[in-house]
Image (tube, rainbow, N blue to C red; front, side, top):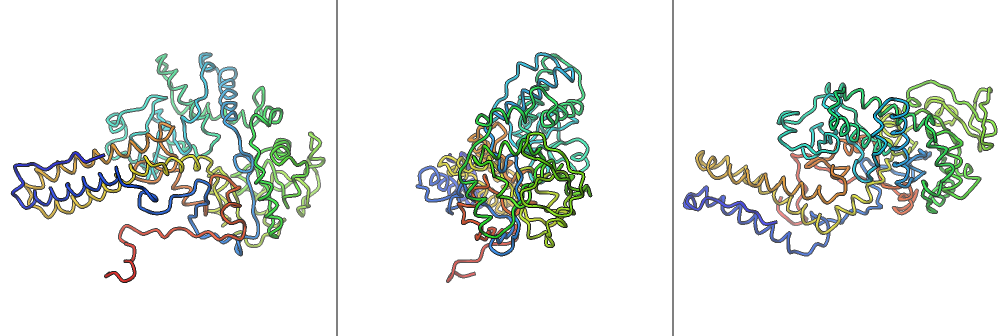
Length: 515
């Protein structure tokens, strides 16, 4: 992608124009190199990230700083096929039509895999699906009314030229969807918005988003016919993915002397059937010191509700014990509970030596990290495929072009303010405008490499996405799968983050170079 920026030939005799021409000529040469040169690493010349890697936000020493490792179940230990999202979508649609009075035409909708991504938000005031960056700015290339993408001009008219959503607006009008289970929810919202627009239905978007959430919750609570849990239990081979490495990971935790636990919102019969299938082991509970289900996270981390023990947990019709739980017994199954009771009954006097691994940001990461000092690991399934895209030759070349364009824009801006006013107005401003357009086109080309029309989950144009920023804030490490902890070095491995420089800092010069 060669630059199309040229200076005014009639002004080349002026020093400012000559400096401008030199900058633009150098920029064009650098872009040509990115188009033709061989690539031995990342866009910055570094090592390409491993799609199966474990990435560190804060130092985490598994070797000597973690005594207890806990897991969520859904989307963490249990890896689902894409059939699950279709099941949720159709069961929720059925509930909306048959129970909540939505138009019969909604039944004809089909779930589109790879359309929505995690971390999108629904603007309840405007009825739009939006993507936000880390600073709550709307990505103007990723705003949709239903399945219709809005133009940048339309976005500017709706959100002003700044596109920033203040804190109060976020609190009152924006529903962020961080969970993989939210993907069918987002598509349902898009389908309803399309249908209502087609039929000129006047509606309040806040009612629609509330209705869709109610329908999806009904699916998870077993209030639909057929129920989601019963369907998965009857056909585990259709919905669940087996991975022999999971058993090896759980065995390594036991062998290391660390304690382990399973803490999930799902009911025990559902978890029991799933774990039996995933591990091909009827005695799967031997891998855990504590098994706790129906936990009601994130309320688990804020309440004082006591634990209750299940009698006959594996009979298919477990019963709640009436006896007070005063200790966790190996092989037993518990429900409800709270984090304070968990610490007390488990004898966990140092919460910061607990590592909890889960996929749901609000339920699994934010509350335990922020309120109880648990260490946390985020499971981001889509990370593997997204890294594969960003590691592709096409993406690397585009990212190199983007970096060079940013450098030239910065250099041109500095030069502009040292030039005479008329030269700045006539030549630098025009060149900067063209470079910014090229910068934008390159950003859009990179986003277009991803299957979803919203681009990658972890980025929003020049910044990390709102979702990625939340992961960086509340997850010590993140990876695409729990089994990646085996690949990266096992439970004796220590993770250290890359050194991140503030905008006013620079890396030290190489040895022997002048500072």
